[in-house]
Each structure stands twice: as structure tokens, then as C-alpha cells.
Image (tube, rainbow, N blue to C red):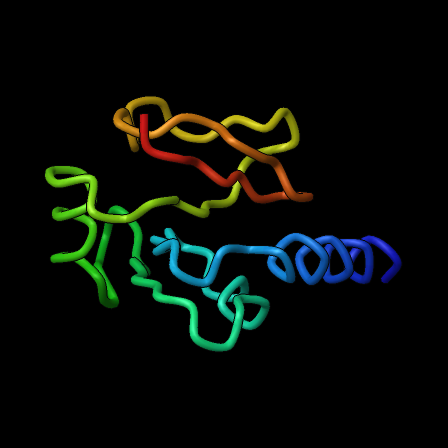
Length: 104
């Protein structure tokens, strides 16, 4: 669909100029990894309230230590994500249905 191709184009453009030394934590948005720079440093969490597929340790670390420079996660149509999920990070950019958060 055209919506899908717009998202793809926006992600390609955004991550084309991403600083490859900045680390990313990808939260439940594994499709974003395809668009990251070739040598990007990233960690990810994949799961829900019922089960964790992988990344539990990284999720705990990013919450406790703020080790990632930025967090990428999916937002709703209004650009919102669950309150309190990453309190040490603030909205930097919104790319289509994704929010890019940076450390406070």
C-alpha cells in the first residue's frame, strides 16, 4: 500500500543520516532494524504482558542505567506511547508510526 511505502521511505531517509556511533534500543519494533545503518549498535526487546520473546535483560538495563542513546518504539495515531515506559527519555522525533526518544 502507499501508506507502507511512505513509512519505508521515511525510515530510510531518517536512518540514512543517523549517527552510527549512537546506540539504539528497539522496543517491540523489530522491522525498524532493517533500516538501521550497517554497523549500528542496537539492542532490542520483543514481547508483551504475557511473555518475553527476548531482550528482558536489555529492557531492565535501559530502564535502570539509560545505557542506550535513543529508544525506538511504535506509537498510536496521536503519537502517544504507554506513560512511564521510558521516563528517562524524551520524544526527539516521530517517523511515521515510530517515536525516537533521546535520553534526558
